[in-house]
Length: 607
Ligand code: G6P
Image 1 (cartoon, helix red, strand yellow):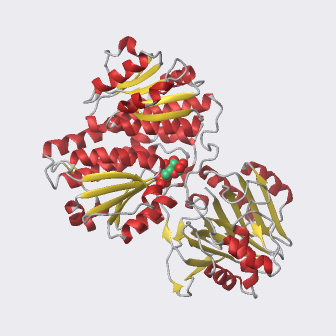
Image 2: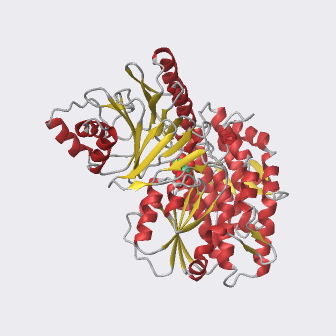
Image 3: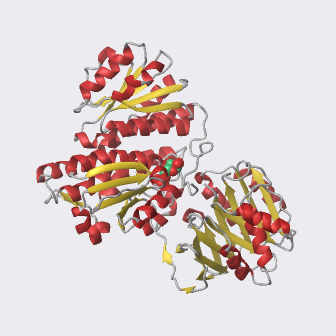
């Protein structure tokens, strides 16, 4: 979603700001803008790609050493040049970029307009820049601090003033801001990827804190004026992960990184001799976790489908009752939470607003709240009582891929940790661990079939609709496969529990409405074959993803994708891979912008 980058230092700001914006493009946006303090303050905004802004800025901008920039994902007001950030006050000397939503902006706007402030945009953000102007009496930091005390809602902001060309004020509540401190220069961004190529010394701002950045220096205080002392930490995320290498798209690169993602998820976490997992991040809560009777998994998007899979895994390997809930629904339910409930928040980014709000609600209700998060130091990682990092590496493609298989891997480890303390046998535990360790090479085998899957994509990519079906462990995979196709190839796709198909979607089946059936030779095999027969009887075309060497499907299906055999519970780690590749190749063949699908954002920081 929206992205912020800010720079103050000894180098020309525009290059660093534009480069930072390009690093943030993957998060999704519809317009962008930059403000630079030179002899005269400079402001430029464009709708569409950052490349258009870049062209203008290179032609027009002064060589100032302080500036702020933004990619906007419209919430309040259309994606127009006027509504793009930075926003300015009446004097045109204060510039503000903002992520989040100012919930009381209408009240503020009315009050400010009544005292003479002139509003030019449809955004909620503009109210804040006028509010800062109103409080400004020569000290920008004090003005921002006072203004924020009147604000309800969420924000990550960066503010500059033409009379203070040596400082940037940043603040956060509910929307991340990270500082980067270099030699003679300081940066701030909403995402560490926008500053990691300049410095590895980073400081994460907490909610209700504001910071003043000067070249090579920073100070932090809380909104209620307490000084905060926080040292910079080293960011070790690996800048190389932000380059595509020889791959045409990040999505494909990340699909191909899945064997390593699983290896990294397993590294140091497998205890063969006991048939159990070692998860250091859960040690502090191990007793509570092992005594817990109820598990609620909350998440959004792809992480939600990982959670649905997690439900089957925990139910199979432990004696816990398990619910999986969309975070956006969970947060508004009346929760009658039983004692000994554990809530597990799954999130790649660790910043998804709904997941964060849901976990806060669960904490308030007394649950033990755990996280399964990829981004180290993210808000969800910090706000949970304990958790496990996926260590999948930075994921740039908006459509999540390697994070998903990594989440599935870790859900097995977590369930083993609980299950082995109850009645799960050593043999079963050890067999799953052995299976997990074979998964990376098995994914490599599937990846070798990428060109065959491309051929299938060429055959089917003109379909307007697609049905994905699967049972039990394969049901979440069907949902995830359909989501991938929607997200990147813009083909309408429905993921369905195979058994539910006859209660509706079967009415849609005809020769133009193909089905992708997940039918590995597992306990549900015969049932799914019956569903395939029902589709066949209605002249539906079928691609089946099945176990290697299964020759029984014969004439029943049009096309086959084979995946290696594994422990039944682990099959989704393999069957999801051809579905990701299928969506990817369909998208490329249809000319879609795979890494930046329209209207989508990588990290959804608004409700
Ligand atoms: C967005 C992304 C999805 C992601 C979802 C949840 O919609 O485009 O790829 O699955 O958010 O994100 P999270 O970071 O919480 O896993």
